[in-house]
Length: 492
Image (cartoon, rainbow, N blue to C red; front, side, top):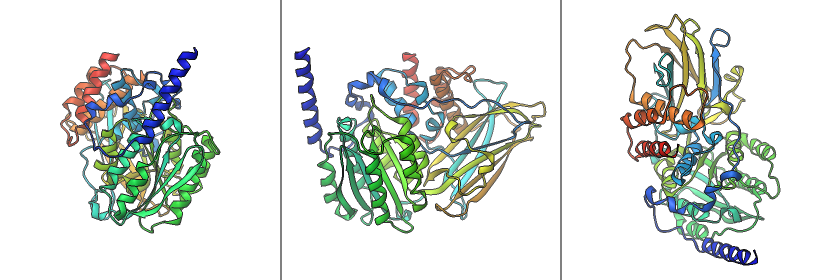
């Protein structure tokens, strides 16, 4: 036993040294080469923490025709699933949030027109896993903006450098991603860096990106050790964002962590209360989750949900490239506090069920209450939601099935703007490629969850729907999803 302890201590010392020497150079490498960076604790996921998901049930339209939910632009659950599958095991059922699987992808939705910054669309088709039911797909698209149309940024990089962040899939990955992000930022953007372990430190005052060399130098020096004082660090980050607040700009904290706070204010409820106290300051919160083995998913999702934020999980340099480079426009919100409300026609709809969005369901009366917080949509970002419908006897071609209402704000604190769309039963059986992709993603999630509502869904069905959906796929994300479903079939 003593010999084993000595060996483990030596390994730990080597690990700490390797973390401190990590550089943020070296560029990106293909995702196929990313799995070797996974550390051994992926094989022991018992320390990970996910909130229980209680799936939405079917609701009788005659008794409650209206359903309301906040949009959710997160993609963390999808990336975490990918890490699990590529590591050789199926994800925890409670980590499978189907709305995050759907919204990981950019669908081929039309951009808004006129002075709107959101466009909405909808379609109905046969539900693949229960052909006696229908599937309603709802889509939202945030206005696309060129780089020169996006306001200057006031970013605070809030970086967890505690001992649990040591490793090539954690702090090393953070450093690489942030350095590459700087190469795509405007010279007039600003960056400050705050770190936390056993204590909190401002390692870089707010600095213009035209001095990128200074910012990168500060990033390269980061190493991991000690406990995790996440609460005090968040307070400092918000204060920093307020101090350098850009009116009309993109004021955002980008937090990189495994969520394991254990020093100072660390309880989720207390952290949420602190985050909510800054909601009226016009500051956004983006949380990037890293690592596994002690991964606190439930805490990070809760904080982002309550802090005008988004939540992603980073498992590879490919994901860093997606978040910080390919989809960097998503960091700028074109629609704030965005809510959806569907009012079903009981003549055409017997029952309905919202797939996913379990922790985003809202009270119907909160739809027009502009004081109620809801989700944000980034520039060029798409949001997709699905309802499974049991048709009533009155369901027929050209019948009115539902009314799709959306409310969103151009800026935090402004009055909301309404959008509405009548959803009509189609006269033909054809559906779009967007429908097939969404149905395939949902079928995959239902199978991974072992959902009681999966009907005849199988991984083979999910694969066929996803693989056959001929949607735009410039970065190969849909193609890689088909490969993941094929791997999941072998694991199952």
